[in-house]
Image (cartoon, rainbow, N blue to C red; front, top):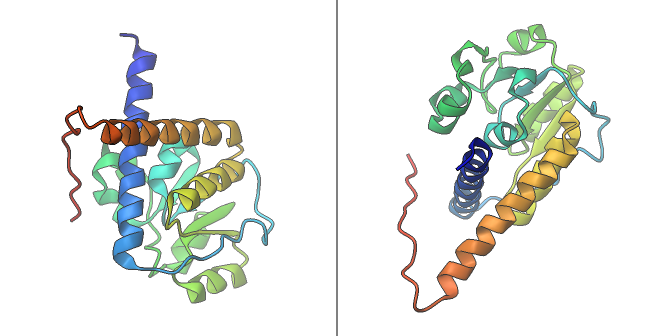
Length: 194
């Protein structure tokens, strides 16, 4: 099998796992839906210097790690990212989506900051400091697709975002089809949350 097929299968697995993790987290956390501010704020298109406090798994699927100048310190412990981004630990961390070292963040001179919308006071603080902020908080598969497409817009990778969204939908369709066939043994697998 060619190298391209392996990569496609790998991204399908990543997309499926990510979809399941985000769905479970949305249910477990019982959070309320929040709207992204991409349509309200003027964010750069084709951003070149981005700090990710969240959504690093989605960004990995877009292939833009060369544009990431800062990450949440939690990203250093993400097994998937450790495999996908060999230079992960060389990317500086100005904090987390809850506690930000503003001097370290400003020193990175980001074009945009990606953060969950769970802490609006932090989002407002960053915006008052003149930082363009993209807030995300996917709680459903529809939210996940919307946020993937918004990240695609931010990075100027809209076609790639649509392609990844289609692969994720295809994976979910395959899972649904496999689960609806009474004669077929269900796929083996599990989800581990630490």
